[in-house]
Length: 148
Image (cartoon, rainbow, N blue to C red; front, side, top):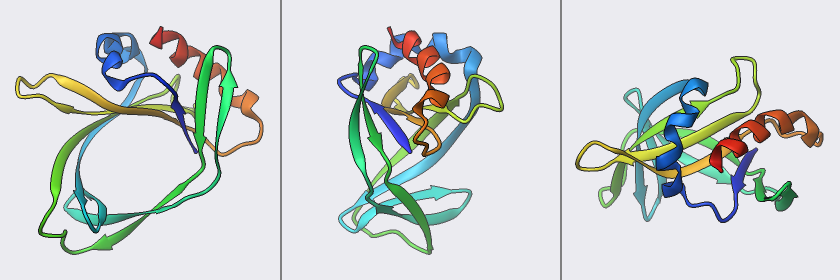
């Protein structure tokens, strides 16, 4: 499931990126293609259409934060070409974890500007779908404290 922080703009992360460095677990780049026919991703020379199955979403008040819990699922369908009319973005994705065994990932996605500076455009937590929110609290607390 994805957990979003309500009313926190991604551009505010730019000033906080250094505080996350010690938790960097993985860094990757991929191409995202938007068109009238859907959302696509290009990774390692493969093209996939992203199919989203919407599921339960709800708001959860946690400490002083409003969290948006999204249980939607995505399925990647391998295809061989993208629609002609599209908008292409090169996305950098940073995945942060407290440690290598942690189930909770803090993900920051963004693009580089013309001066090659990273500009965050999206961020969220990726966590197992569990009814026991208590198991996620330690990880969430660390990353949320770094956002202040």
